[in-house]
Amino acid sequence: MSSAWVLPDHVADVLPSEARLIEELRRHFLDAARCYGYELVAPPLIEHLESLLTGTGTHLDLQTFKLVDQLSGRTLGVRADTTPQVARIDAHLLNRSGVCRLCYCGPVLHTRPERPYATREPMQLGAELYGHSGLEADLEVLELALSGLQAAQCQGVLVDFGHAQVLTGLLAGVEIAPVQLSALHHAVALKDSKGLEQVCHQAQLSPTLTQALVSLVHMHGGVEVLVLAKAAFAPWAQVLEALEQLEWLVSHMGVPVSIDLAHAWGYAYYSGVRFAVYVQGANDALVRGGRYDQVGAVFGRARPAVGFSLDLKALVDVCPKQARRAAIRAPWGEDALLRSAVSQLRASGETVVSMLPGAHSKLDEFECDRELQNVQGEWRVVGL
Image (cartoon, rainbow, N blue to C red):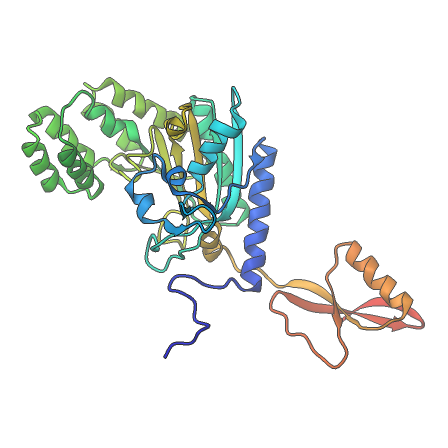
């Protein structure tokens, strides 16, 4: 018989040292975003289901917990992604003209873990920039994400670039049944050349287009991929424009980059450049982002949008372990001078741990390397 205190699968308590690091990283990211001019918003954890899932596709629907509102009887959803909520805020509540920069941080809940050993309760942090269609906006949100990873002392940072308009451009003007289009996207995502050829044959695509699509499957590697792609996709102006955008962004990167033009995650969501940031020690991308200009269309306001998101819990897993914070041990007492000394030390930013009568403290987050002692009638901090 299982214990009543056992948590659900892929849900865990966050213990002191890890919780403190998550909070410190949250503060850094949000402070950095503020320095860029991003304003903090805090969408609700639950919404009416139709609002929460409008325009997000079936994937997010399957990841969303549903419940019945005891007040209205309507179906509610617990958010599985904050990005659509921020788009709603930009479109309906703020409704500003021009550029709008928003950031957020809070828990989301997934019905299933997104990958092995992942939590179902990520702490999602992100930033969104609305109202600017230029690559300057894409670069800004990417630089903001990289600055956070740098502060977290992540090693081996690599940015993997793709572009939604490569595949979209190849298929522009081509009539293909929805079932076959879905199969084509699936084959590209799996880099399945044989399966892709079969789909192209079933859809009766031209030999030229079939060859281009099969070539796309192999377009991954270093920056040389962009040169190969320009030659392979020369007849498609929309694709060439997408490749030029990637070249511009790559030229502004101060970290290693890779290119994967066949990476099809979020193909129904992203509309332009998309990126994934990998770091040493992580089994999957820590940061995902890119351009999704149509994200606000379902809320009646389609305008340029670009952003990123990450899970702070996943980030903590690959951060260097932090040393315990130095603290001062102090006796408990009612002496006015003692209490004044403790208050002054805490006001100056020191951690002072009072030793309560008849008890001792076991600390995971702090290490008492000094002690407050009465030296000739004066309370002084003495090293241990």
